[in-house]
Length: 373
Image (cartoon, rainbow, N blue to C red; front, top):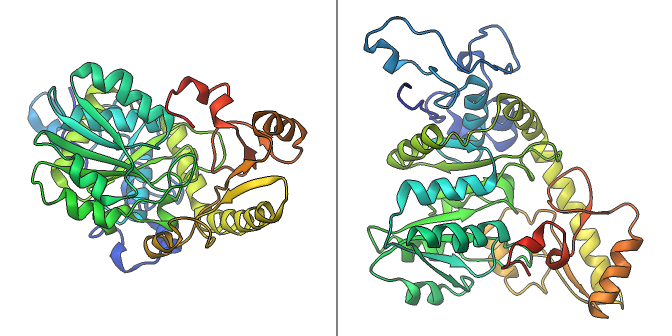
């Protein structure tokens, strides 16, 4: 038993959000006491209740915003409204992890016999989910180089229903032209475009404004920013998409806890200042690596030697904090390098207040993903 999905519209409800800047929205969108039960609190409380009082036994409960915590939670709702606002979206739908968001999209919109186009370089957890789970559902997946829009166009079949992009990509920071792919996708009425925006965050890139139908991010990374929350989020301006994804929240139960939503809602308040410092530090690291004789190649989207530098400047406000580089000497040299790090830690993940370095193909976690490079 549960009520109708709650609405997370921000443009009308949150101080005419479309006219406010990013730094203002991150502090105010979804943060007013009208969005939760405790009317006088300035900070969204952690509402741990799994169930909420109903007015009676007839149908009145259907119109209530909160009935059962899978269907809606005030702490989660405050966070969802905030992130939707930052993405320029009407709706934000939070899930218990980044990979759960991808599974929710597959389950909500695809069926046996459908076809997915996916970037050849995306997060290994996503690509392996498509290979090991989605394929068992009878859904075909083509992994292609999406940095050339022509590759996408010629890969579309009559049963293609979704294009999944990640830009910048994990781990080699390839840039895909979101607007160009969106134009191609929308020439086909049954085809939609989903973009994984994790490496950029909504501060530096807004895929929905570039034509994407869905914007996904691993909240675990930059949005929360403190390596203490596991969560994912999907944002959209499509009311039908929102309804179907809310239904996936309800039916699968793949929702984040109120405490995680509280932490992420708290962490995102510093996203603007953190992203600026991430970028400042990344420029310094990338410039150093480019000049180091032991480095074969270093890539950063904000430097002219990046193959898609001009595109990155065009569709991104900034270039985030990820740097990819190749050491001379191969695996042995990489092992020595990682073992001698002091301030940087050899650990999976990204986007935290910690500085991390990782050799993806041999990382104890990422090596489980067959497509990781």
